[in-house]
Image (cartoon, rainbow, N blue to C red; front, side):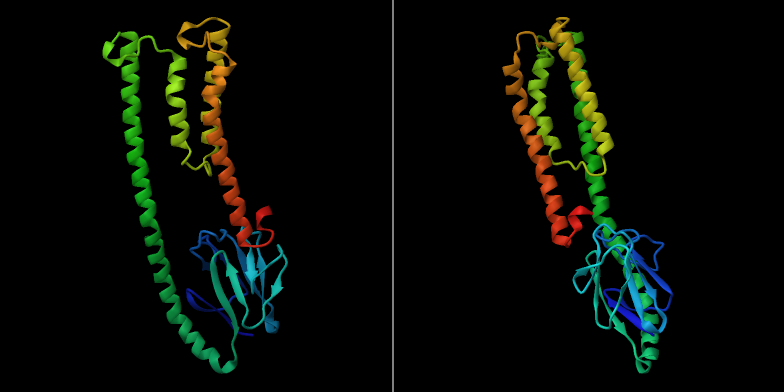
Length: 271
């Protein structure tokens, strides 16, 4: 039995025993769709009985006529059914002998057009990525410059008594009061996804530094910490708002993630 897939890439004749579908370049049908998995699904020939489709454990699921497939249970396709992979949909059409030859010729030209389209889509998607990468580099350079200026000023103010810095007499406690809230607000817009290891290292280093300073300030009376004379109430006043803002941001991100999964289909939130 001959059949085609009719979608945004044009018409593709199902001419191989197994047609792999996904975002990875190793698939026979490559889909430039951020919501498609690398190896998302496959369409397998059943001989004269037609074709079946199987979800290969994708993140966002494979849908036929709006119904999500069970993983990895094959589902026999019927003429005229709509398949959705990620946000990409195409129609499964069974061909009769009269139209088979014309479809073959059409697909030859469509294949060339689809290849050109994939190249153009890739170039278009690379443009915003390059722009974002440039902006990130600019911000990194600016932040590095600010950090260098602050380090030089701190060394000059504390070690060489540069009076114009006004750093003399300010302790670690004063720096925490100055920087904590702006740092939390500045990092609230950053994404933790894909960078969990780096953020974990930063948080562990910050926690260890604060712990050492606490022990030194309260137990060994390190005067540079400025912790002496500050009680639990002072720490609550200092930390409550930044911790509340950070917790609100994390809760909102988790809510948005779950909401997106629920919109994509039943059972997606648990995948």
